[in-house]
Amino acid sequence: MLEIKNLTKSFDELLFENFNLELNPGDIFAITGPSGCGKTTLLRIICGLEEPDSGDIMLDNQSIITRPAEKRNVGLIFQSPVLFPHFTVKGNLKLGNKNADISKSLSEVNLSGFEDRRIESLSGGEGQRVSIARALLANPKVLLLDEPFSSLDNELANQLVDDIRALLKSRKCPAILVTHNIQIAEKFADKVISINR
Image 1: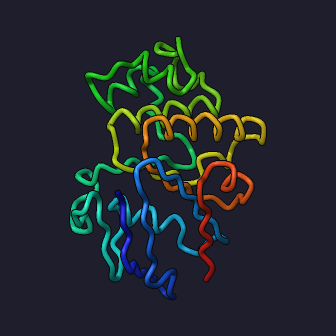
Image 2: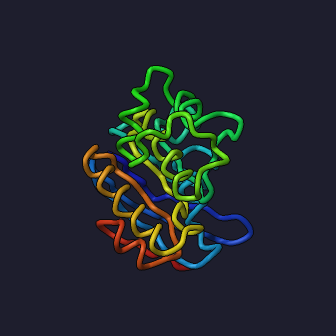
């Protein structure tokens, strides 16, 4: 279970104050709001890439607020796939877990048979599927998704939303999606939260 308690963050001005959230296994939340309201900053704080002004983050009843990012067991998917172009799909997935069952992982994201494909030959949607497979190979306790569907056309985005939601539900992996697209948020998440500044 992920608990965010009274999280506050400001830069030149206040982004959010006393933000609270509780995420149980299998819960999928979406956070929406205008650009600059702190959605991405919130994800960066949860995964350890930024520090809050105050508040705490608990994962399985233990505070992770002072843990470095690599020790938080939180997966993060960015807007654009972050993959190594000189590796194959299999090579990229092995970076997530050297002992992984690559065929099973690719099957879960509907990319069976893509093991030896070069990254530069993948479409945007295929690249995002590889990124998601790699993140899940680390067995994160929570998965954070920062606008992963925004660069895809509507049909592809909707298909990926359905597939990834089903995969997360089957694994009971809690997730937080940040998006400006309310239709995607409502389709992907069990609950939608709006951050307004």
